[in-house]
Length: 220
Length: 220
Image (cartoon, chains in turn yellow, orange):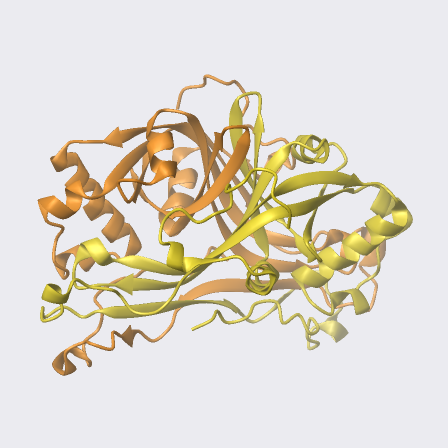
C-alpha cells in the first residue's frame, strides 16, 4: 500500500488497537457482507451501504448502470470504505468504561470502472462467492447481457488500517470491588433456517441452499 | 426535518424501497449499536464506526477530548451518519439476482458540541442505555470529572431516508423452473452466553449482567 496522504490511515485514538498488516485487514474484509462507502459530492459527504467482494488489494462494488454513486466513484474521486464487525457489549462496573468489542477496517483509495466483459464477469463471480460461498457452482451464471447491464467498480485500496477491541472491560481499579456484574456479552451473527422462495419447486424444498458458509462466528 | 440540499436524501435506486417517516427511521436507528460517520477533511472523505444513541431527532456521539474526528464534527461541518442491519442472504436461481435483505438509514446533518455538564451527563446515560438497556440502574454513574473528560457531540438530523429490502429473491420468470434452490438465509445478530470479567468477584459470577436486551431479532 502506497501513501499519498501521509497519515490519513493512522489510528489516532487507542493506538494499541491499530493494525496495518494485510493479513489482519483482509481477514476483517473477507468476513463482512456490507461495507460503508464514503465520498463527497457537491459539498456533502455521503455514506452508502453496499455489498462488496475483495479481489487482492481491491474491493469490487456493483450496481445499476445509472447509479449516481458508482458513476461518481468510478470517476476517480477519493473515497473511504469501512467494514465493521460488532463482537460484543463490554459491560464495566462504571458506565464510563462501558465499551464495544469490534473489528473494523477503514480503507482509503480510488475507484475505476470495470469495463471489459471478461473482468466484469470475474468480478460478478467474486461478488456472488463473497455473498454466499459455493453458490456460483449452483446458480445460473450471469449472461453477457446481464454483465453488461451491471456497473462494476474496482476500488483500489491505497492505505488501510484495522482497529480491534477485544477482551474484558477495563475498569478503574477502585471500581473493581463494586457489587456490579462486569464482563462481555458476545454478539454473534448467525444464519437461521433457510426460507425457501414461495415459488420454489416442491421437489427442491427439502434441499439445502448450498455451502454458503456465509456467516462465521466472530473472533472470541 | 428541513431541507437545505433538496434531494440529497432521496433514494435514487429502487425507489420502492425508500421510507421517509420518522417511525421507520427511528426504529432502524434504535436497533443498531454502531453507526458509520462520514465527513470530509482536507479533500479526503472519512468513514468512522462509532457507538451512538438517539435522542429525539439527534444522534449522540462521544469520545476522548482530543478526538480529531469529534472536534471537526462539532465545528459544524456537514456530515452523514449511516446505520445498516444485514437481515439475510437472498439466493436466487441466477447469480444476477442474488441480493441482501437489509434495513439502513442514511442521515444528513450537522453536529454541535455538548458543553453543559447536565446535558453531557444525560447524553452519557443515553449512550449507556442504548448500548445495554437497564445498565445505568446497575453500574456506577459517571462522575462529573469523567463527564468533563468526555467529548460529546450532538448530530442533528436534518434529512434522512431509510431503505429496506426484505422478502424472497425476485428471479426472472424464465429462471424459476431451474433446478436451483432459491430463498433467503436469514441472518440474526444474537447475544451469546455472557463472559464474566476475569477479576469479577466470585459471588457475582452466577449473576446476570442485567436486562441488556441489547440485540433484537431483525424483522423477518
